[in-house]
Image (cartoon, helix red, strand yellow):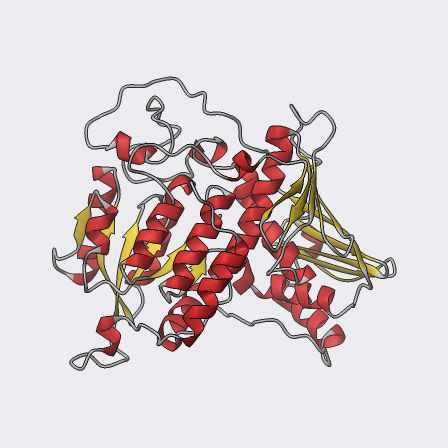
Length: 443
């Protein structure tokens, strides 16, 4: 199997720049005005896409055309929600995502399957001429991140990675403070999230009819069915497939895909990523302590704490959802934590805005300002620009998470080439991909 490297997919991207943009047919056709509704298809109707479904149903500029899930109960529940909203029974419901993608009236798709399906679904959507909102982490492994990026670029698609923290003001301001040198030269970063994944060990359970389990397992191994992997019916929780190596990447690729993404935004390394990964001592059982090293010498450590914490020579910036703290030369300037009783008299927006007004009024570096992640995506669809968390940014963040997982899974102490996206030393190329099953391959 040939694994495309970064040079190959950037070559494809360069070729795409000179090619004419391929606009969605419904937007660009003579009988349809450019401001008409975009047809939306949703693939993987678990808890995350149920939220996306509600969002797209509530917009005046989109119409949900079809939903897809290998669980009959989930797809029929999603169809019922859409039909109720529109007052008809027109929403299509599919078991096979390729049937949904074959529809010409669908302009954009929202993919929120388990991680092991992200690349296959995304590449198929690119080939079908759809623009894509794809959940994080971008893919299940490094090979897939390169292949999906190449597919997006080669097919002139718009792709928004669902790392919506980039569309939240507290994270953008935190990164602007870092990039403008407000806390001096960055030395270390601590990111806080949960444990690495473990091999699937859930016992076999009986399964009620209506779930295509072979298709659910897809490119991964066919393991015994267990409700922890895929609870039947409308999903009210985040299932535990994400805690397995076979189908997810633990909290490293779950919350880590959010927080490492913000750390790299603050460092300004979206196009590259780390140059080294270091396993913690006792990596076989460790749950914290893996490190990523960047070309400028910054050390990012997986630990416990605030969420994302930048430590510079002149201060600190800490940020998380509902939390923000700016410390300059040992003095706390602005602080908010929704769980802290002492913060009842202020708000997150107030503290972040005051920090912005005081320290960024004349900032030389201003980062992409997205007010809302779906809005930003749909604007990019119409303008044919790149959204705030374009596929290549999603790839860099996902690859960094995969490298960190290698520290916990294999004891990796490896040098990494962030341009070629391959090991220089200390790593095994086999770690960059997986064994694919049957027809479910990513070439």
